[in-house]
Image (cartoon, rainbow, N blue to C red; front, side, top):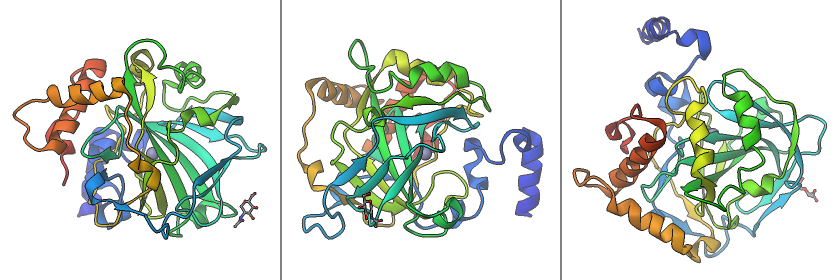
Length: 320
Ligand SMILES: *[C@@H]1O[C@H](CO)[C@@H](O)[C@H](O)[C@H]1NC(C)=O
Ligand SMILES: [Zn+2]
């Protein structure tokens, strides 16, 4: 019955031609995506997180090796823009923090809007840097709870000069890969430019891939201090073909402990960011009562400004 419904929908909407899944039909995603109990992304409420004072879960700082000069080739896979480490180059390695052992960098890709929310607020963009436990094949990694580690870095759009540094080196590649299936030649990129301004300040929890098959094999490390990008840079994402309007998965049930690194307690915001946040709560519609709805609706309105009216309604992204 379910199988035939999927089949009919696939035919109706031509899903079978482009990709076997779509952000417009998340309820039809297979396997763990609908049955799992540790799914991602989630809304991280700071007051519900556990500060790892004794250092039992987070042991020492995150250590980043070899991120400053990485040869990457970019492509549009129909769901996202993805930059893959080119074979033959020594890949960057991540260790420390909540991770046991070493994790080899594989690729980074982008979601606009962000997938995770922090205190009910989504960001315009989230960067995912995907790492695999060193020595494992992908097939092995997706069957082990500790198989993958993904860094999530938020980006905030600011207007005017001085905000284009983070994305500067990847922007020239994007016009080449607006269409699904396109790929660029490799080029060298300083991945550390895409790190959060405070890379030791993060939340961490055990969750899943946010695309099918949604395997629950990911140690998530979600940084709370956003990068800045410029409004000019952000505009181009409205032209990228990702099969639909959006490329982020809905928020999933939390169901578990989210840890917070000690460094995330030193809460400091730049004056410009503070005014952005103040503006955020000022501009929201009064018809939306929960603070979670406020953040999401604000950011949707923000997205309308860039990409036009055809965005998901607030009700569709409300916390389930
Ligand atoms: C991780 O990498 C470091 C540095 O390359 C190495 O010294 C260490 O033995 C590795 N650890 C494991 C568990 O492989
Ligand atoms: Zn992702």
